[in-house]
Image (cartoon, rainbow, N blue to C red):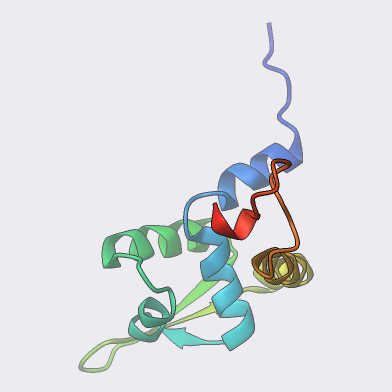
Length: 117
């Protein structure tokens, strides 16, 4: 018996739904090429270990490109690939939604704003 084929949306969501992943993509989308240290500073609250794991994942699924310059100290720059740039419009819409919800416009049905959750 063969396994049912996975829905492409399910596969994509599994790849990009990890904590920090969409935020990292959005930071790279809005800022362009960033060195590791600058990216870590912009993703406030992320550990070096988790940022490294997320960047490796994003590189493995061809959403992020890692450019290594063999200098002393080594210089590593991260950018979105063409495939990663395809998410740009979606990331822009998510950002606009986040701003709208942060303004207190959305509620949880009990009158409590989602920004407070």
